[in-house]
Image (cartoon, rainbow, N blue to C red; front, side):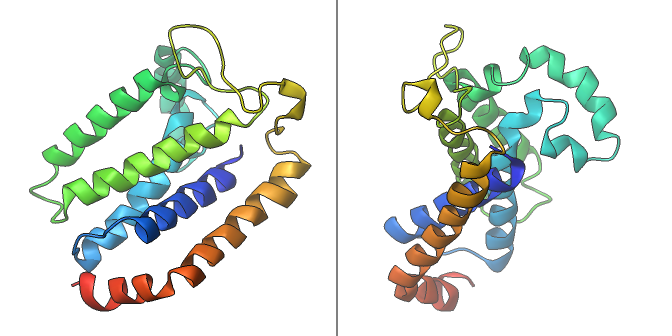
Length: 191
């Protein structure tokens, strides 16, 4: 999937989780940082690719990517597996606790939003032709549906004209269906 599809999938998943699960009371700053963490999590698994969206957002990112990406074994290996989920989950929690004295937000909520974005990325890549090595280091890439010919081509017509608009419609539908919960969130939970 392309970066914009991953961003939209991360946001749609976050909206879905907010609609179906109880929300903690959070500050406006926590809400803003959490949304950014969700978008970052949605792009983070592609850190193993020198042309990944996340590298282009950093100063000298393409230079750093050439140094860093070889340690992850190439595109769709460690960062696109259960090992990657635990590794990036631990590292992001560790990083958030390090800056928790400076960044005055609810770290648990921010971390949850990051991980929601991260997991949405892996799920979306599971429906692509390349699949995802969920059981790394076992070199089998899992894809849905099992027949590669029926999966989505990254950046292809189905992604651009069906999946991406479908995510937008799904987000709108969730917000419309649970509008009272979102209004309550805006009025009462965000302090």
